Image 1 (tube, rainbow, N blue to C red):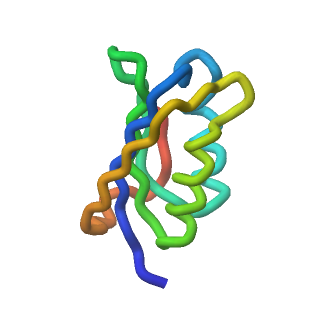
Image 2: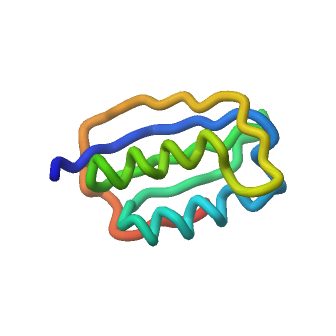
Length: 91
């Protein structure tokens, strides 16, 4: 299975609803490495690296998010896999 990297921005009501913690939990469950953080403009930003199917499943989940979230938009930029991460963390 090819490995990929995705740089993701999630817009909507995505802060204060456990979006980052839920993303970390699922990423670790799916074997995806990288990070997630809140941005000052209210969006959530994340970088996902791992097997293509696992990264895609995590991106698909981002379109819904955890209970309490309202996702308006998910922007994904596919990049070259770097292998820079060994775990998934909240920044």
